[in-house]
Each structure stands twice: as C-alpha cells, then as structure tokens.
Length: 257
Image (tube, one colour):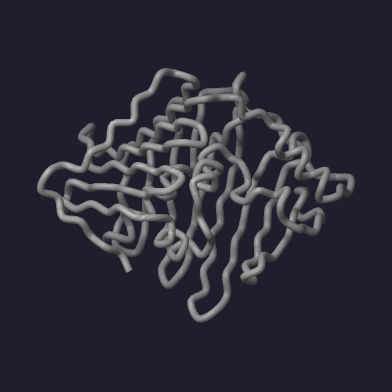
C-alpha cells in the first residue's frame, strides 16, 4: 500500500488525458535526421509559463488496487509541485515535490512520508529528480537530451533516439515528425531485479504558453506491474497559486525500504 501511494504521486502526473482543446496535427517521420536536429526540434516546442494548474481524473491499477480518483496538480515552474488526491470530492492525500524533497500524507491510514528521490528512483528503475517529474507532466523527455549520446533512427514512422547511460540503463525516445513532440519513452534496467518504465503520449494540445500532452499512459514493471491513466479535465496557466501543505497532527511517519 505504501509503495502504491508513492508511485501514484510520482506518476499521477501523467496519463490518458482527453482534452477539449484542439489537437496538434502530427506527421510521420520520413527523411532521416541526426540526433542533434531531433533534440533541437523537441526543445523548440514552447514551455513559456510560470505556474500551471491541472485538474485531472486518474485511474490507478496494480495487482491489489484498482482505484479511480481525481487530482489537482499545481506547478510553480522549476520550484514546487503540489498534488492533491480526492475521492468523492474529499481530499484523501497530498504530495509536495521540490528539488530536494518528496513528502506526502494520506488520511486512510493516518501516515506520512518525508524523504528524497531515492525511493522513487529505486522503484521506477531510473534516477528521478524534480526536473524529470516536471518533464513528465508537461510532455518533455525525462532526461536532458542535450547531455547524452543517442543514435537516431526511424521506427514505426517515428524518429527514435536510443542511448545507454553509465549504469547500463537503456533509454529510448520516440518523436512524431511534424514538431518532434514526444510520443513514447522507454527505460529499461537489467540485473537481478529488472525494471522497465514506459510512458506514452498519444496526443498533444496547443496553448499560447505551451504544447502539452492531452493523453499520457504509464506502465511501470518490476516484480509487479503498475498502470496509471490520467484524464486532464482542465489546464490553466500563470494564475496566482498557493501551495498549502501541512501534515495533520497525530499522523505516523513511515520509512519505505
């Protein structure tokens, strides 16, 4: 249960979203491109905002739980993410994510967790930090692609970047051909406990401030499989947001191995 709640917060930032906004027209990859050109094209998509407010419906599923909830995600760009999880209109849990801290509390068991990104990184099989969580929410590649080495190919009508980091973790990114919008990313770690993380972005919507995913699908596989689908019901930019977070009195702190 503890693991399920943490993963829900880590990933409730991404998944199957149906938007009322117009959908960005995409194109198949045709001519071969170099990795540098694909990466430059991907980062040319605007992300010009200071705050972002997302309201969403979330479907979470693992071998023990299948739970629909609603979520409100507040982002102060590069500084703070606050996720509020509600069931039947009642706030059941909150998570606060900053560049140095991951904290959450949940009412069902009266518990809270406060720590760093190490736990989330172990569970998902890839090193996580604040930037990667924010990137997941806004449809950017998890990693800073300008700092890695990638081989560019065409795969299933999409531009594909493939690389491997110093820890032997395989990373693949697929982009459509019109605007180099991210369509899928796959992270795979071998070893005694193999782990994979797949994130798909079936569609995107244009806003004056940014192009954001309208649908995101996530599947994390270790010993067990977790899937999360999120439907964005509304998106607002640059409103004056507050980020209230305080663990209720009497809650028990937990540690997660």
